[in-house]
Structure formats: C-alpha cells, structure tokens
Length: 604
Image (cartoon, rainbow, N blue to C red; front, side, top):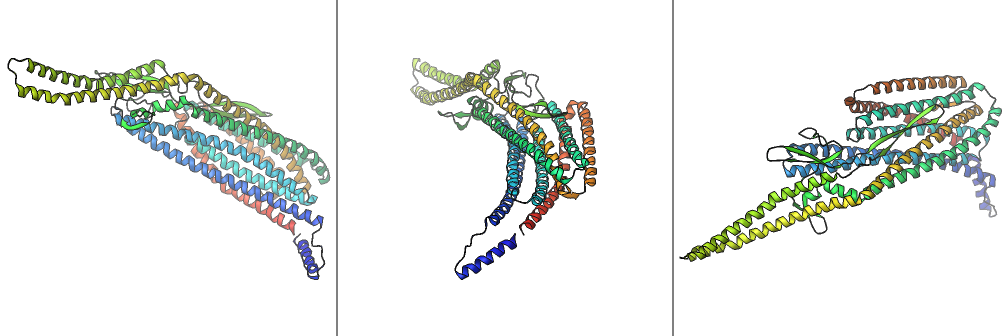
C-alpha cells in the first residue's frame, strides 16, 4: 500500500511540475487508504479505552486505600475516646470519630457501586469498539479479514481477560475493606465466601460449554470453504446476540444509575440529616438562631453511641444495631437505653440459572426497614435524661443564686428592722445585692439557654417522627432499585453467556478458515488446539470440584471464625491474582504486537 501511495504521489508531483494534472487519487485507492485508517483508528480507540479503564481502576484503588486509612484512624480515635465515658469531651470525641467511621464506610460502599458501574460501561464500550473494527475490515479482502479479524479477537480477548482480572482484584479489595470496616457481619461473611465459590462454579461451567463448542468445530474437520459458508450464518446469529447483550448492558447501566440516584435520595432526606445531627456532635455545642453550632460546649448533652466495642463490654439492652445512651444513678447503677436503630446495610443474595445447568449468584445491598428507626420510649427517656442534667446543673445553679440573693435581701431587711440601725452594715449588705442579682440573671440565662438547646433536640426528634413515612418510602425505593439492578445483572449474564457460547463457535470457525488457532497469543495446530481445549475443560472440572469442597468447608466453619476466615482467604486470593497479572500483561503485549505487525504489513 505504501508503494502504491508513493507511486501516485510521484506521478502527481511530475504532473504538477509540467503544469497539467489531475492530482486526485483513484476511488479504489481512497477506499483502501480509508479502510486502513479506520482499522488503525479502531485499534487506537481500543488501546485508549483499556488505558482509561486501567487508570480508573488505579484511581479506585487509591480512593479505597484512603477510605481504609480514614476508617482505621477514626476507629482508633473512637476506641481511645471510649476509655473515659464519664468525660464529656471524650464522649464528644467518640461521637465525632463514629461519624468519621460511618463516612469511611459509606465511601467504601460507594466505591463498590462505582466499580460495578465502571465494569458495565467498559463492556458497552468494548462492544462498540468491536463493531467499529469489524466495520473497518469490511473493505479488506477475504484473507485480510480472516487474518486481522483473528488477531484482533486474540488481542481483545487477552485485553478483556487482563481487565477482568484487574477488576476482580479491585472487587476483592473492596470486599476485604468492607469486612475490615465492619460492613459485613459473620453470616454475611459466610455468604460472601459461598457466593465467591458459586461464581467460580458458574464461570467454570461457562468455560466448559465454550470449549466444548470449539471442540465440536475442531473435531468436525470441515473444509475451509464449508466453514466459511457456515460462518456467515453463525456470525449473523452472533451479531443478533451482540445486540441483545448491548441492550442488556444498557439496561443494567440505567438500573445502576437509578440505584445510585435512589441512594442519593436517602442522603438528601431531612430525616437522615437530623439522625446524623442527634447521633453526632452538633448538639454537643450550643446552636445559634440558624441552627449552626456556635463552638461553645453544651456540657449537659448526652452522646449516643452505636457500636458494641466499649470498655464495659456489650450491654444487654444495647446491641450493635442500635444507637444508645447510658446513665448512672447515685448508687452506681448503670442503665442502657436504645434511642434508635443505627445505619446497617445488608447484603442480600439471589441465585438464578443464567445458562443451562449454570447457577449464578448475585447480591444487592439493602437497608432493613428499621434503618434509623426511632424508639419512641427511648427518645422520651433520652430527652428526660438531658433535662435532668440541666436541672441538676443549670437549674441547681439558678436555685443557689436565688437563695443567695434571698438570704442577703433578708439580711438587709433584718438590719433595717433593728431598733438600733447599723448603717454601715446595712450599706455593706446592700452593696452585695447587685452582684447577687447579676448571678441570678446569669444563672437564669444559662438555664434558658440550656432549655432552648433541649427544645432544639426535642424538635429534631419530633421532625424525624413527622418525616418517618417519607424516610421509610425512600429507603424502600432504594431497596427496590438495588434489587432491580441485581436482576438486570442476571439478564446481562444470560446475554453474555449466550454471546460467549456463540462467539466460541464463531472463533473456532474463523480458525478453520484461517488454517490455524490462536490461544493466549500462541499459534497452534488443530491437534494442539484440541489438546489445549481438553486441558481447559479438565481444569474447569477441577475448579468446580474444588469450589464445591470449599463451600462444604465454609458451611461447617464456626460462626466466630467466619470473618477472620473470609479476610484470610481474600488476602490470599488477592496475592495470587496480583501475581498472575504480569503474565496476562505479556499476553496482551504479544497479541497487540502481532496485530500491529499484521496491520502494518497489510498497509505495504
């Protein structure tokens, strides 16, 4: 091709020099040139998409690392603050740390959602890029289509395997972070491990089906011309399945956006904001007329605690699912009272058959209906406890100031009633009255200020009670959207499994037309490909057997060992997966180099 262009250019130059030329290239040359340019553009787009996704994964991992550090830092501060619960400053620190822990937990969950959305959007992009490349190949001759199409498929398959592996590592790291950040309880940890094994089984079953489809083609030993004729029909079927897959991915992407919107609605609710206020540090300081903390401490405030890690052990009345407070009477008796259920997000597991004989497991996140649900009697007890502190402190201070003023006023009155008046004593006693009155006024203002703060706290709880119906509806809408996203993922899996199975058959037929098979960037004969396929099937069968044994082991594990076991397994699996990345990267580099070389050779 370069020689043709050079020749045309030279001729054009000569004609231009002689002064009478038509320097336009022929239509056929233009078509070939544009076809090659389109191929190069499609390849560049794929390479750019891979690079962008890898950068996004790196950004996600950095954000996850920051969230884990934030959580661990806040947790350490929380546990330190709990060492002295009688100290109001320590209680304030515990409440602040608790909010920081919750913020870090929310960030980890948000990253998990974003990662899933990123994976779907990448799959959509890959389908579009594949279509672009196939369109670019249409103007090439049959041999070029077969060669470049096979090399492109090998490159795209390798690149997809690499990105899938990297995304899987990112998911595992997020699962690990969720376990370490207390977002997963023992039962969920057990289900998480079982789900991972079930996904291995489903993936292995699909692998077996795809390799069997290839084996069937290889063993049939059809002539290239016969395979070429069959390929037309099978590619048409694949094209339809690609459209079905694209629609399913688009629907899942939309469902994911709707789920995230529903989650944002939860965070926008007035109810949730007030819940964060009453369980955080807002009312530990006095508030101004606009409801903003002034920075001046309200020493009578009682901080609500929401985790079972505390120096006194787990109270009977206060479980890990509640926000609670404790009071101690003069005899040293401590009472724990639940005020509301705290934020707990649960992982719900669903299982469907996505392909013949293949059970696939997906999960979705849901908040129980008691999420931040108020305990009416607990709220009354909580407000009463704060009022009692105000009465004990500011109320008693006012009473003492009033008594001191009244006592001095009586002294003045008694001195003035005496038969022999001591004018010096009277004046001295009267001179003390203004300061004593100021003390009364100051004490009264302090009591009024404290009562206004109590009224603000009461108003917050009253508003929460009034907003409870809207809150419940918002939570239920999120739960429905989250489950709908899970269902959309099942539809995607079914479409991807059907596409993968058909694509395996098409790839095998293309190999017959080309006369060779490419497996992980390596050219093979058909006999070698059959041996490779049989090994892949045997490996997949072993994977299924091992996964089933793992599920049996998980089922009999002790409940108190499940979280530690899940963390240990994830850390081991992450290490193994990361060690495999360099080999996958090499296959991508090799298949890309082979495709680039073939593309360059076609252009000559």
